[in-house]
Length: 415
Image 1 (tube, rainbow, N blue to C red):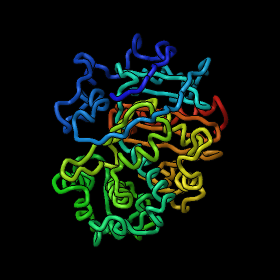
Image 2: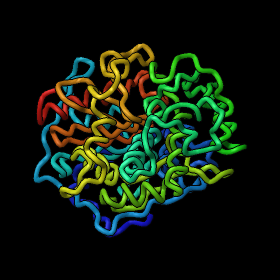
Image 3: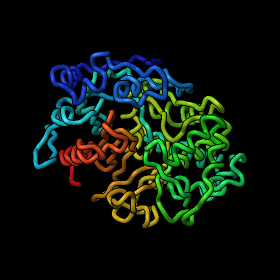
């Protein structure tokens, strides 16, 4: 697993939930078979294989690797664990309750750079590289921050085709980078994970012809670019091609060298690639350990710094994550997204409402890194939810996860 001196904190043994308490739906998720990995990639999201596969996606697909840091960021354990409480369904609940109620594979709480709580379900271990799904979109955005800083990308107002000529003449190619980052190309695109949506059509083309060819199948612009939020993973796929074109390197090479190693990752990470053109599946498909996701969150909570040194320029990070720096139509409370105005969207990053800046990296089936820079608070949440959204099923994972997050915030400050 390319680990370097990984020490699993002794206190974790006392904190890990699952040895004596049953996790939800263990039988459905393959406990009797030892949580097996799917025989092939196309079966990885099936319930019987989901736990095992989400911990081993890079054994099922071509991929590239981001090497770990020569100087990993320490993650010391706190002397004691706060008594986290949250309100949900008219009940006062604990973190242990949460682990018995929801299909979380791992939850880690980091405060002031220390691990204050950690849990896992379904026999997941600290060395497992867990699938992040669309949390990877924010990682792509961090790569753009470095490319801007280095002058490899001149402006986010440039079009995508400026850096990837294969996109010339396509809707996405003629869209400004900033509007792809805001999910605001204006393209007609439905992403509902039904297997019959525009995402499925786009993916079918990329699987047979490569990622750039996917741009050819999205042809109708139903709103002026920059005016309307419409979540479309295809737009991040285009951003991945833009970053490769601008830097002359793969995402694994460039983001590995400029972000992953400087933030102090202890273990190697992997990014699944398209077998046809060997380009990264940038919209998701990034795999890393829970502790390294925590290190990523810590760097974000520290406004892009590690040990006083800027990894990502603070001004750019604020452009990604500060609601007031987004157009009104993309801010929490005003942005329309599937009937809700709760969250906003910055640059490939979800924005939360509240008294000060908070943001979250989100992926389908329950993946999240929640960040509160003012409180120096990070929560990593990995999962194998019942459904892609985490909210469509009766378990309402997304809603209860948000309640848990609010309860954790309440231990250190106010919402």
